[in-house]
Amino acid sequence: MTNKPKAIALYSGGLDSALAILVMIHHEVEVEALKFIIPFGYSTGDMPSGNSTSSSVAKEWGFNIINKHLGWDFVEIVKNPKFGRGKNMNPCIDCRLLMLKEAGVHMERSGADFVITGEVLGQRPLSQLRDNLDMIAEKSGLGGRLVRPLSGKLLPPTLPEKEGLIKREWLLDIQGRSRKKQIALAKKFGLKDYSSPAGGCLLTDQQYSRKIEDLFTFESKFDFNDIDLLRVGRHFRLSERCKLIIGRNEEENKAILYLSKKSDFIFEVMNVGSPIGLLRGKASQDDIKLAVSITARYSDAKTQKSVIVNIKKGDQSKDIPICPIDNEILNKYRI
Ligand code: SF4
Image (cartoon, rainbow, N blue to C red; front, side, top):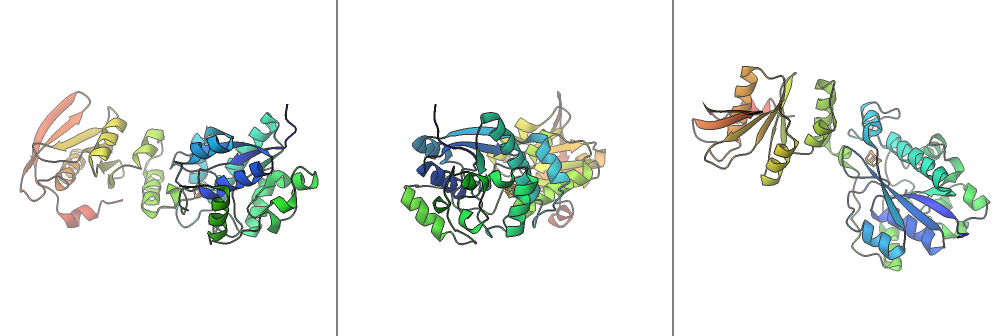
């Protein structure tokens, strides 16, 4: 039995969330970390992308990490965010609320006393403005049970402080976009090789966001496989009914084949270095020809007048000759 206060942490594997945890552990608070996995990227908590050091930090500092998939609930908030989006498709406030609500449920179930995050006042444009921090605490249902150790001294006292579970002087007064204080704190805790600060998950990426918008616009019924495909290759919208994905390297070619369905067309130029092309949707003969000519354009035979391309669908396979598409025409279809 332990009488230590217990906190549930939103943990991304990034520096800020790691520091928030270490500040608490340093003061004898027991911490259990929740690492959220989102369908549109690999990020959680404070949202940096790196996670290579997460398990070693957890091991060294003695806290558990629980992975939690946010699944379709997350897809819904990306589609219809109540609190708007950042510059791209990132629904940061809705995302924070969803993660914090999950953390609140976990807090209740595990008998923890409060939830902590690595949020820093004023660090991110949308979700970490002062008013939004207050609103997020309120709407997540956590209210005073949400503690932000890195900026806690600049925020109103929380319930764990009032209850004497934690002391105000343990909390820090970090704010803004500079990382100096965090880097100094990392040094103090002996934290090495932490991931560099990142701007957010994949949803903050402009090009990736265009692919999501295209998916939402043209596919009324999509699944996780369609979402996984967004991370791979160049994407072309050939018609309202179908789109083409072209691998950019060997690894992407393998990923495309792995994610392909029986109903997809698969293209490969014969006898030369070739990308894999995947055509998904209800394609007409013209769409197929177009897709084949785009695949040929990305092969090593792109300057030839005619190349042979193999077309596979399910168990069927055939070869056809085609002229690689002209660059100017190609650009019309790029997503
Ligand atoms: S960038 Fe925004 S949407 Fe992405 S994980 Fe972070 S808070 Fe969530």
